[in-house]
Image (tube, rainbow, N blue to C red):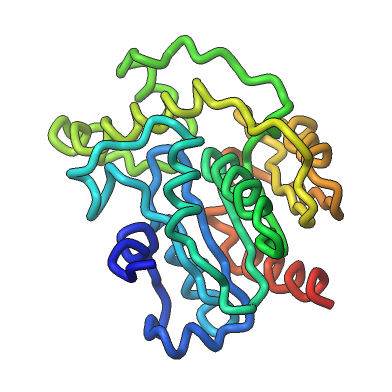
Length: 257
């Protein structure tokens, strides 16, 4: 695995980004951002876990320092690409964490890793996303930029400056179109459920991922399942970085114990 190829896909934040220091971290945490999101969404969590985990935030094509690349408008293709460059965890526990679209992507990567003996992650954390078996809402707004931007604005999580300024808006629209198009066409990988534990996170006021449809993730693993419900909307995690970090630490300890 060429380090340059791996570095293209993963960003590291925190107080110490040196490979030697991070290799000694107790566990590895791979973070997948939401539709239209970027690796920097996970910066606060990476800093909070700087002494506990080797945090790798996935940078999808089509945004930030990869904005010149076309977005990958197929979650299965994107999962294949990420799995192909991920490599091993160095013998440490590996945790996959995804928010919204990132939860579906983390699940697909977990499924691919599980096909290799000993490759299954130690824990999958899915946030603010319906289970693959849950019914999806209508996607009639796909292909209509005005409707897409209205939907993104209603959910929050995207800086209003990027949506209001015509020049900035043109920078983020390609990624939004690609990601939401990928969600509209996504169908979960059929086959055996995962064997790793799954921790599902939901918000009681999230119209995109009702609690009962997040709870349906239980049917996608033969391992332990836990559901944690928070107050808030779709981007409830934004104000809960410390709480999320504590939850991850405790979950890894419980899984490894």
